[in-house]
Length: 172
Ligand SMILES: Cc1cc2nc3c(=O)[nH]c(=O)nc-3n(C[C@H](O)[C@H](O)[C@H](O)COP(=O)(O)O)c2cc1C
Image (cartoon, rainbow, N blue to C red):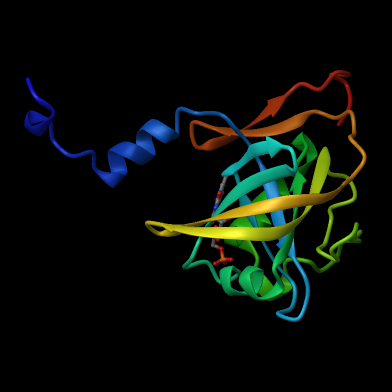
């Protein structure tokens, strides 16, 4: 059998396969001349520690996407097991202009909102961008970090949220 005998992988088969992977869940937020915006994302990955750089993949069709480009900065707040509700809010349950209401937000260096109770947060400047299919890969230099908290982490796997026990498993 040659590779040309194999059928192309469909988008739905690819999504089903990817659903088997467990990923940390984050809020990706921004603020600046374009205003405030944020969404829930799992496609966050380390690129390098010299300089500290990560990538995040954003759907260009999301309502928040143009705001990220305009502001050129973003913050990634990694969620704890206590944050399933806010993950759903920022994934579309709450309209974009209301997602930040009713909570206190911090900032670090760039001015992007930081969730104060996050497991950890990476405050970043967007330094490069690559269009790939429906998404943009944003290359982000990390300018500041929030303090690391000891809490249970939030994972998304098999299309549902799961708990990742922290060092002190009783922490919320
Ligand atoms: C668990 C989970 C992970 C997600 N990961 C991403 C992601 O990595 N990148 C992305 O652009 N959207 C991701 N989304 C979708 C966005 O959170 C959101 O639903 C989409 O941007 C629509 O929001 P809007 O109302 O801002 O347009 C994810 C959603 C969920 C529930």
